[in-house]
Amino acid sequence: MEFFDSHCHLDPMRSGADLPEVLARARAAGVVGMTVIGTRAADSEAAAELAAREIGIANAAGIHPNDVHEIEPDEWDRITRLIASGKAKAVGETGLDWYRDAAPRELQRDFFDRHIRLAQTLGLPLVVHTRESIRDTLDTLREACGRGPLAAVLHSFTGTAAEAAEAVELGCHLGFSGMVTFRSAAELRVVAAGVPLDRLLIETDSPFLAPEPFRGRRNEPAHVVHTARCLAIARGEPLEKFAAATTANARRVFLRR
Ligand SMILES: [Zn+2]
Image (tube, rainbow, N blue to C red; front, side):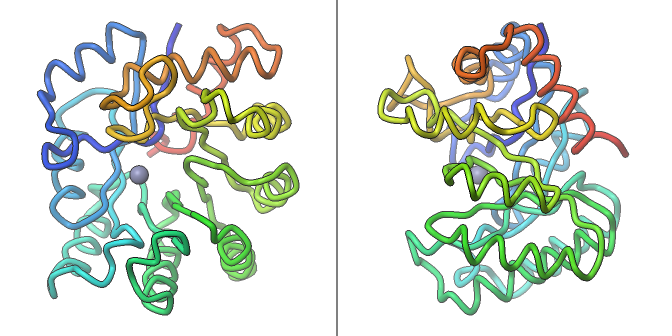
């Protein structure tokens, strides 16, 4: 069986990575692809280098909403240069975070808009972080969709069934992380069970959000298999079918060019 981790962070600063071992364990678990996500200029550039030398790896370049107030003066230029030069398969992660509220909301909105326009101009998928901001996020995406085509991925989705349906209607893909495996997440499993199979993605968000039975430990792409198994059961689908579909979805979104 083949699995695709559609959202992970593998920069040594965050994950402490022993990268060759992490990648080897992922391959051994059947993880044939992953999208390595940037949150600043440096990890976006590192993700691009990794994607250029490893098979099956896509990468996203962007500034995380919780970091937009802390970037160096040249970081946005480095991101746009990387993306314009064709070295990124996706734009992000970007979005709105009203939970941490680390950065001023207006600045988060400004950067979200910049990422969206970049993705639309270049026809690249957009990786979206939304936390306690789903209403504003969906409104922003709807407005953007009015201007032209946009392929957005709502990563680590935790919204309601109605919000999921609205995102699907806007053409979004929804990524589910290890959170969906937690005992307390019964409602989220019901939401995930209602998402059309061709819009579903699975992810680890490594090194965070490790699924059961690794909850609280450092997460890595190999663990996405546990999230897949949990979601396949919740949906009443054979794991083979679920794995094949989510892998095909991720390849279609992130690796088509
Ligand atoms: Zn992330």
